[in-house]
Image (tube, rainbow, N blue to C red; front, side):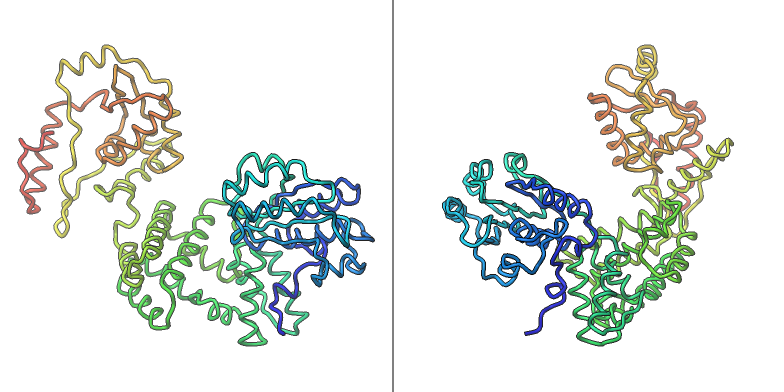
Length: 530
């Protein structure tokens, strides 16, 4: 019977395990010195070698002729464990044997000495699936097992294990395997199978696998079923991926704000039976690559792609501001989540494409699409040590902007009392840093500002109005209040420390009302003062 590649090429000794030296070297040292623990916990993402290392360890502790900490693979114990004739190594799937009775039966077996080897080894896979009662039944045996029993627990979700279990095991963390290591292993497998594979194809397989060797070998198996010459195009067809040129073309349409071209390309890919959710996920990865190119000094070291694809991605990244790239990732991820919840995938993809092609696609606020550009101009001015230019209100004839929400100005007596009792807020820089964790661009809008505490108010003062424009947006105002609460531990209302001259403010408001009325939006100045 044909054996799939991930079983056929499963490592038989620690030396063959790829990308986990922090695990294999430690286990080999323990085996060489005879310091064998009674319980091990292997944790990490799927396909990284947890079950493989469990089986190797089960052989190693029973091997009659260890070779530098590795099982020899030739003695009676090693051969018996490999072919399944030795029954003292028991592998249990906790997903289907997760009840109290299953663990009690296991516990009752531990009192019996092994029949053919030195240690009876229990490998419990997906141990996080055990019920609370099952964990409690296992607890005492795990703490003080008979001297001839070893437990090896494996899980992908460490946080679901009780602390009482964690404290009784020797823990080993399995990392995602690097794309280069996976690609090298795939080329070695293809060489043994007399199959040709392109370097770009091996890198693409490694990228799709996302650190899981088993996933990479499974997809390679599918590709080998179609051809003995594995190319990048074959991998894309097998995995249902869009051609890289399509991703480049789609991103070009977003950059050029050409919605017609983007929607047309989506229709073309849809007619070729490309999955829209997968397309959306690929675009997220492409935008992530542009983000890393914009923010890292040496992005080439971690981006898995051909040199030609990297050059094209680098050119596209140079055409987009970082804020628009981040907004693109957020929009695409939101669309992907909606697709997973059952939304019409093609329609959702088309809506997102049109949104990314709109002139306001880089805006982070719903009420003022030009605000981010003003903040970016402020950042540039701060770096250059110059004074930012005052923004000019432009009349919108096709799609006029709604009147902004005004921050209500307290009475003169109230302002006098607030200022009189105000003291400088020394924690204001910490508040700005808290905002910066979620949005560097928004935090830049508050550069140069100061704040004062007066009773239940935090009064913000700034030489520019950008931060006040931000506070007019309800979501940003709530974010600021949340940041203040996280830093100070108290709830405060927000206000301005100083307001513009009333006459000038009235003139500006009149000018705004005049512009809006001329654009066809009836606004009553008296009713919009607050």
